[in-house]
Each structure stands twice: as C-alpha cells, then as structure tokens.
Length: 486
Image (cartoon, rainbow, N blue to C red):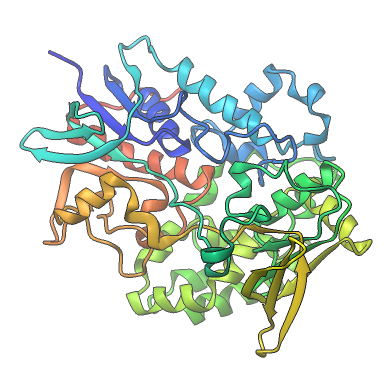
C-alpha cells in the first residue's frame, strides 16, 4: 500500500514547518509534497535576502522550526559557527538575533535533513503554482499552472501573507518615477543615493529594517518615517538583552507559555475588546511594579491569543481590530535591540525623524524630486520635497484572494472569507469551511490565512505552534499514529 500523501501548497516558513513537523511527529511512512515555485523550501520572501542588516525580531528560542524542540535553531546556529562569524547577533544575556539570511538557510537545511526519514517518510518539492483544488471521496487533487495534477489524502494551504499594500499616492502618474520604491524590502534600495532625502511611508518593522539597512550602508541624507497613528515597534525587553544577575529560572519552553493558565481577566465569560484592554493595562502596571516590565503582561495575553480570540463575539473582534490593532502591533512586533539602537542613535542626531502623518499626495517636481503632501491628524497639510519615497505600509488584505488557488476555491464556494476581513473561515481543527457551512475533511489552512479565526497566527513561533496543535487531528483523519516522544 502506498504511503498517504499530504500536499502542502506554499513553501515559505508555514510550509516548511508543516513538512518538518509532519515528518517528525507522525509515525509514518508519509509522502509529503510541497508545491512551491522557488528553488528551495523555507526562506519564502521574508528570509530570501542577503542584506546583513535584516535580523529576526525575536530570540532564537522563538524561531525553531518545531515548537516542541525550541532549541533546534540555536543548535544549528552554534553548529554553523555563527556566534563567531556574526558577532553582531549576540546580546549580553547570551541570546542571539540572527540574520534573516542565515535563518532562511536554516529552514532550507532543516527541510533537506528531513527529506528522507528512517520510517520511510519523504519530503518532495514540486516547483510550480497551484491554481485549483478538486475534492473527492478519498482526498483532494491539486491542479498546477502547467496543467499537471497531484492527488493526496490531505491538502494544507500554507500560502502566507498577501502582497504589500501600495498607497494610492504612490501609484498612477508618479508610479514610474525612479524615486518611487513600492517594494523596497524585496526589490532592494541599492539605487538610493547616499545623500537622498527619503520619505518612508509606514513605521513598522519593515520600515525600521529598511532604515537600518540604509544607515548600515552609510546613508547620509535625512530619513522621515510617517504613520497614521504615530506608533513604532517597541524594543525587546531589557530582561532579554541584559546579562543575568541571578541564577536562571527553570527552563520554560514556548509551548508552556501558550498552554498555561490564563490571567483571570481573560478567563472571564463576558470577554470584550474593552475588558481585554483594561485587563492588560492593569496587569502591566503589576508586572512593571514587579520589575518584569509591561512585556510580561502583554505576552500573557498575546501568547495564548488563539484560545482567547475565538471566544470573542464578531462585533468585539471587529471593535478590537478597528481600535486596538495599531497599538497591539506596535507592542507585539518588537524591534531587535541592535536595529532599535542604530535607528535611535541617528534619530538623536536629527538624521531620522518619525512623524504622525499620512501621505495625502505626491507629485514630481521639475528638478526630478518628489513633492509630498503630508496630512497631520488634525487635517493640517504640509508639502515637503524628497528625492525618494519608500513604501513600507504592510500587507494588502484586499489582495489576499489574488492567489489563483484561493481565487478558484472562493469562486466555487469552497472557502468563506472571514467577516473580520482577515483570511478565511475554518473550524477549530483548521479545516476550510465552505459557503454552505461544511468543513472540508481533506483541506486545511495554516498561518496568516487563519488570522480571522485565531487572532494572531503570524510569525514563526505562532505558526509552528499552530501546526503542532493540528497534527494529532490530521493523523487521526489518516488513521495513523503519532511517533513516540523523545
């Protein structure tokens, strides 16, 4: 009898962690096939970079490809000799914030190391794009862009994030201007002149990465970063970057943080966006007084969010996204300490500036520059001349169904867009739910596609944990046993 086949659509981090955890966790044998057009599985867009300024925004412990083996990435990092070759990664506590390029290599290496398991499980790579999926009584068949078909007992959608949003002011007549950079994170900024006056639209992690990269290359011109809310990512807490002053506490693996008891305010029956905000503020005052910082209280809410978010009524989810998301993102997606220090040093010198404004208009000047109209929250406007404008505004939720496979599934009613506007509807075991309300027995989704359902399945740690949670149900559906632990 042939081994059951699991097809994973998408070969970025989500697809890589799914493939590796399936190979490690299910007794096997399995045939795991990853459909990914890129040459390797793992890096995806976030980690396919050679820029040494781009670092992971959390410590190595949070970036293991398998959340149940949290030191896996750290062991690889040390085995590669990266503490010596990349001394800038380390902080006083001994933790490391690795370069994204090294992390992409780790993901590829780890997938390759699990491609042929002793139990007969294999991980294969089909370079192509999935454009359709047809369900039948025994599983599903994925159709690729070259017309070929691949049948499997289970299909996992790991399509990742949608494309970056393009501000209206940066499209249209000015789109072809050489100073317009719609996707600087992936297209690069090598053509930006060292003395150019720069406008960065957005002030999140992408913006700080771009600014740090420019400064690291010796950029001399002014850099102005704008955002509607005037917020920027908070730095990692001192307890992560400072040397230990006491004996370390007993090891706490990330899964403990996800599955531990909830604070009392989060265990209440009548949860609301306001009760969560009030509860986390009160808790933060307590943890700050104890010397743990606000981060301890925030993490006590954010880590188990996948258990909290589904309990909120839809109206409260929408209220939280409307009023609290900007604050949540600024505190959740924290800056690597070396990136934060570099940007703040140049900010103190007056070279870098952060402003609470939005880009209301943009037009070319006769001299070849760009005249930007910046609108403050009160409505007042100011025109400022820049040599280049860099888009760092984040992901475009409206484009999430531009993916040809998701478009096809939506057209056939096999998936339902989530009412929050984030991702799609699944059941508690990540199975896609059709427009008729039926869960597909052989079709699951992981990662950003499930944000509306689970709140924050974003970032390596949370996606790896999501995969960890769904594997027992998937194994049961296949009639297979889990491998012994250890």
